[in-house]
Amino acid sequence: MIEVLNIVDIKTMEKSKYLFKIYYIGKSKFFGSQRQSNFLTIEDCILKALMKKKYIHNIKLSGFEAASRTDRLVSARGAYFTCILEKEPVLMEINSALPYDIGIWAYTKVPLDFSSRYNAILRHYIYLVPKPLSHLQNISSINIEIMHKACRALEGRHDFINFSKRSKNEVNTKRDMESVKLSIEGDFLIFQFKSKGFLRQQVRRMVKKILELGIGEILYNDFIQLLDPLKIFSYQPADPRGLILWDIIYEEKVKLSEDLRSKGRMESFFLKNKESFNFKHQLFSLLQHHDFRE
Figure (tube, rainbow, N blue to C red):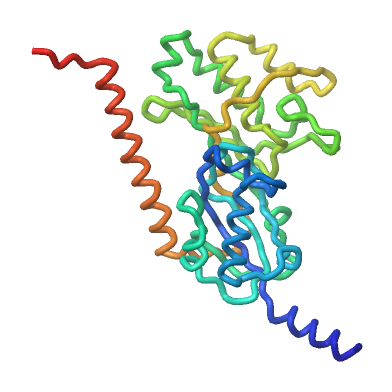
């Protein structure tokens, strides 16, 4: 019996844990990032690829852990996960078993007790408002300054229960918001949120109320009351298609190595889709506005 245990110990020591950086596009075919029974998710695709290429043979023994969970239609440029592998990873080999909507583009070896979730010191989300600013201004005047004021009010430590999807399992709803920024890029509003951790739907609900404030649907005092945990508010979050998990920051000693071919695969995919959507935008603009009759 002792000999068997020693063999198991040796095999465990041979395995190594890795931290991976991935991107994915939140298409409707994916039912969010977290594994769910009978539904296709981002994690399902990654685990199937690792199994197919023989990096893992048993999911439960792989110690797979995602750093953050995202809802359906939410995208990521810098999501992370850890996993114990049975051989040194070759990213393009793993990517060859993934759809182009998903890709691993950087990694590093970490200690076996490292947690992609709990060792994270900062999470960075970006929200691109799906409707162009010019379209919003045609519907209603927008007070950008009061939106900046609301962003500043969210910074610091607050109870964000009214900016989250309520859950009986969530005991502590206080979070420290390091920064909340609003900028205008071209014809679009872009929000940036940085914090060590977020509640479920927190970013989308903050965006929803800041936008309502900006177009005058609520007053500034109404917005501030949302920070009062003794009051209960019910409303739907902003469109998930605008949300991007941009990056997660770890201690300086955790240095990831970018794989050039894998990063090129990612950038090529982004460029191809950008060109496709630019063409579609021009096509529908012509159909809507132009008259070529002589």
